[in-house]
Image 1 (cartoon, rainbow, N blue to C red):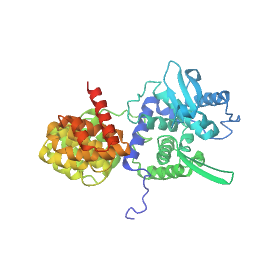
Image 2 (cartoon, rainbow, N blue to C red; image 1 turned 180 degrees about the vertical axis):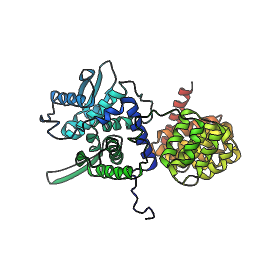
Image 3 (spheres, one colour; image 1 turned 120 degrees about the horizontal axis):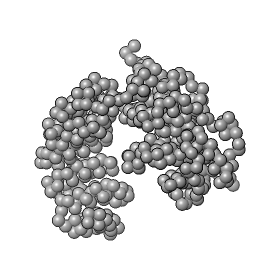
Image 4 (cartoon, one colour; image 1 turned 30 degrees about the vertical axis):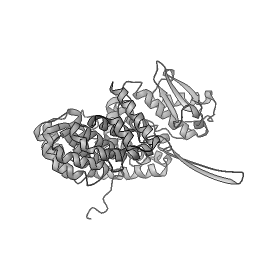
Length: 442
């Protein structure tokens, strides 16, 4: 009644759409039968009968076994165990060679589940990067690399290693620590497993009991949602159908009538297909009034595709700069920079964002102002005010973006920086960024 007890997806619209779309992409690359016929590999003696040793030979045997489960030829990869100091902050590394190299941090050997998760992730690199299906230039390639083991049935190890806590007691002191491993959060792993089960027709998979509690909760909530609504881009009824190229007429229809997931995916597809017809522009602009914040943010970003033709959206985009989530503000800033019109108003509004405090928003505002060239000269005072916290907090990208903007709108950026920063250390850092920018510009 009133939808109060309707099942809800455990992910927000962006996460849900990304997960379904990328599972569909994996099906296109590897074939849906790889998923349908996959055996779910569990952390049990059935799959790992031999004791897990910590020497190179034992880890090599473990790697070879994971190669078999994931469909990788062991002859294609070599293994190295490396001191943690040689790869700080990384559990494993993948190096693409004629024979690829998988490096594992020595500390991983003390935790079998983390070790198996690391091996799964690096073998997924071999399938995706080594197989020529992805490059490191794809912005979400590490997320896809975490997702592939779910598709292949070996993802439980990664899902169970997203958060790792340890504790101990020694010499009168007790200690506890928590660390994160991998790229995808547990809730996305859980929903990806829900998609895995949904497509295979599994309503209550027994293997779910081996998932950590948060991932398992997301799986069960996801399955309830999928069975009740069928709202999914990765659906058993359509998974074998070829998706036709998106047309302008198709985009208009989907953006007007689709679910939030469909609308969001269509906005991504509009950008990928470079659909810039006036009819598409009108319906994308209308999405700025959507009820879903993720759709609004992507509609704003998509308007950047149309450039000056989207000038009519400026009032709504300016309004979006001061309402809603950061993702909406960032999308609106990107679009305003691409439209590059009405500088007397837009430059002033974007300039205020420079001191918003969010590194991502500062970068978006600086890059948008950069599109206006010398018309953005009035931004210099706010630019310098924003540069100080960027230097103090060690935000490299905001620092580079702000200095690049200063170079564009000023004839004497070095003199301005020296006059502005009385603190010698901050002045040194600002001038260092300027020198790097000048070298890169040559």
